[in-house]
Every structure is written in structure tokens, then in C-alpha cells.
Length: 528
Image (tube, rainbow, N blue to C red; front, side, top):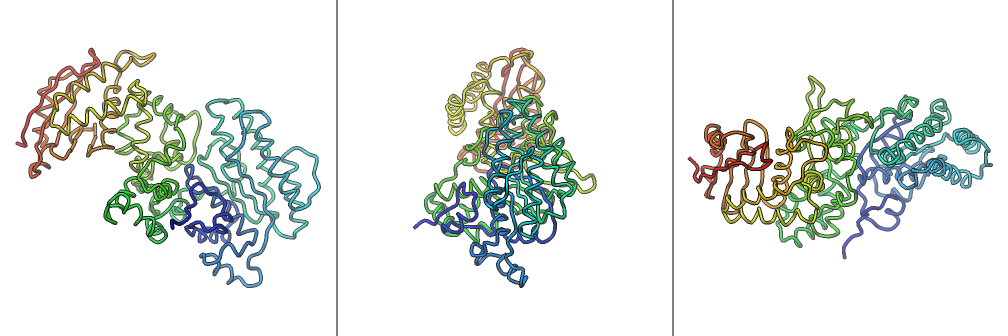
């Protein structure tokens, strides 16, 4: 019988009481709860932030039965008389709510306070929200004799849900936050522990300026594995699921692990911390016994697409690497034209390298699920086609290359470019657009065959490998096709494939700014 996997489950108590598989993260609960006061953690959606908040809630509620056999049980029992102490808790779960109306955020915060007043038998305090919040903290301390725990999950949801559609309401939500959570600033004596989570860290939200005691652990090596599933956790906790997936996909064990890594691994949230798998996608793959794009399908990155198209950043940078400072990554501004911080915080870019001398991070797309899912979502805006049209054209191009028909492949490229409408408000051809379109087409082919696309100097622009053929492409703009063919030879782009038994084609392609299409091309066989 298949084990119960907690796909989409965010309540620790529910997971533990109902026999779901649980990856033990209580070491982080122990470290945080016993080493400081106030923290902020940023992680992408569906990475386990809400579950971690719920785990903290159960821990500070003294629900010791839920922690049997977990790391924290032994550590807590070592404390002696004060083990499993119960603290008054105020929890704000903000992922659900209607925040586009003037009263939306206020209602959500008020509802959380209603729950606390009812649970602890507190008298309603007739005041504005911030005054009521402050009064509840004081009364909880007086009534229980213990300091108060404040947990805030997805603090940024009221801002993210209005930042594009309703900027006026976003500003009103910011102002409400300013008065409400600034209450915590001068109440250290009443507070045991404070923990905020979110996807983004908005630089102009007063939570981070007013609460200067709020420690941001989002990029700390020590907490890099706090959300997500590490390589060790994968193999220690999901042995049966790995075997079932391998059996269903007819793969050897090691190949199954390799495919899981290519699809869902690759996330790094600090310079030297451990890497993690996307937990939602990993569990979904085990449940479905298939390598699907589960995380990407749960949300459409409209904001990211708009940011990317506005910035005109070359698409190849997403795969080959973009550079950013730590402050840029962790302090998001809505009016910042640079898409990199939002891409990183939302999980579409991840850390792949760190330059200690200049304190610069290099980021790229983390895995195939994100890469091909995001590129496919770009098709309508970059190619002017609907998503339904794209797979058919890609399939035809791939069939040409698999059959050794480079001329037919170029004909289809010409046909596709001829169908792309002029960009609205732009000149018929503008700098870099042809390369964005071509890179997108070739990159999407990589989901179905070995396709390495670079679009940068120093190496072939694209290499496609099929079962029987290898194609080395070089692309030029407004230049003789001979230049493209000569560069392939002069730079030795075919040398790595000399010993390969497959037939090799050298393909030079020239684009014309005047024609907005392929003006000329050349094809040569051979490896010399």
C-alpha cells in the first residue's frame, strides 16, 4: 500500500496525527526557538513555509505527543522542568484573503485577533487594530505569566496580490502594516519569539525598518535546508517512493535519481549552503509516478513575464547566469526595472556561484521543470502564438532534425518567423529580438532532445544531438553566410564530436533585419 504523502498539507498536527510521511525539520525549530527572538524567512511558494510556521505553533503550544521520534524530542527533554512549556501564541496565516478591497487586510488581521481573544478568554478591546493588537499581547502576558509568540505566515501576500492590479490598495495595505506590526518594536519584554515568512522582502515595507531586531535568515548557510528537501532527506525518507517511480518509468534506480535531480533539484538559497529539491514537485512526482511540471502548473508567472519583457534582458542569461549583489536579491522594490530580484525570490532563479572578493552572486534557472515551464509560458508574448500552436510546430522541427533534414528545419524556422507579428509600439525589428525568439524556440526543443543553446561568443550558438545526428549551428545577423560557416571551422566547434559515430551537420544561419527572417543559410556535412 502506498504511503500517505503530504502534498499541499501545511498543518503539522494534521500530518503527524494522520500518518503522513514527515521530513524532520525540527532541528531548525530547536535552533531558532532557543537562540534568538525575531526572524524573517523568504522562500518561494509551496516550499514549506506554512508547514514550518505550523510546526513552530505546535512546539510552542507544548504538543509533545506530535514530536515523538523527532530530533527535537530528545533536545527538549534535556531541558528538565521547563520542557514542553506552553506559550500564548498569536498566529497570522495570510496566504488566503481578499486584499483588493479597503477593508480586506483589516478584516483578516482582525479575524486572527478574534481567535486569540476567544481562545484565551480575553475581553474585546475597543480600539484601532494596532491598539487592540498591543492590548492582546499585554493581556496574554499578564494572564499566562509567559511571554507571547507571534507567528506571521506569507506577510507579503496582501502586497503581491495588489502590486499590479491595484497599486492604490497596495499602498493602503502597506500603511496598515506600518501601524499594526510596529507595535512589536517596543514590546521585547512581552515577546518570547517572533517569526515572519514571505516570498519577497519588500524594501519599503516598514516591518523591516521598524522591526530592526528582525533577523533575516533567508540567505544564511545554517538555514539553507529549512524548507525544501535535501539530497540526504530524499534518500533517507523516500526509498519506497523512489523504487515505485523507477519501476513505473522503467528506469534503473540511479537513472531515476538523476532524472529527479534534473527536474526538481538545484535550488540554493545561500553561498555555501546545502541544495534542496522542490518539495511540492517531488511529492507530486512520487504520487503520480511521473516526472511532471507540478510546481509550475500551480501558478502562472504573469508578473515575471511582464518584468522580463519590459527589461529586454537576453533570455540566454537565465540559463547561463546573471549577476547580482546580496542587497539587490533581498530587498525588492516594485519600481525596480531589474527582474533578477523578483525572479530569485519567487524561485525562478537560484544561486549557482558566489564571488567572495566582490560579494557577487551568479544565478540561473534551477532545473528543467522551471526552465521549460517558464520558457513555454513566454511563447505568446515572444512569438505571438498561442500555447496550443507551439507544441505542433516544435514537434515538426524535431522530426526534421531526427530525420536528418536540416533544410526542412530551416524552412519551418522561416515559416515561424514570418508568422510572428510586429511587436506593438516597436520598430519592425529591434535590437536583440530575433535572438530572443530563436533562443526560445531552440531552448524549448531541449525538453525533447539534447539541445545546448548558448547565443554567446566563444562557443557554438547551438548544438542539437539526436539518436543519429549532431547539428552545430552558428547564427549571424546581416552578415554573409560564409562568415557563419567559417566561424564553425575556425573556432573548432565540431572538434568535441569527432569521435562520435553520429552523422554531423554544420549549419550557418543568417537573419536579416530588413526581412525580419532568415535571409540565407548553409549546410555542410562532415567533421573536418
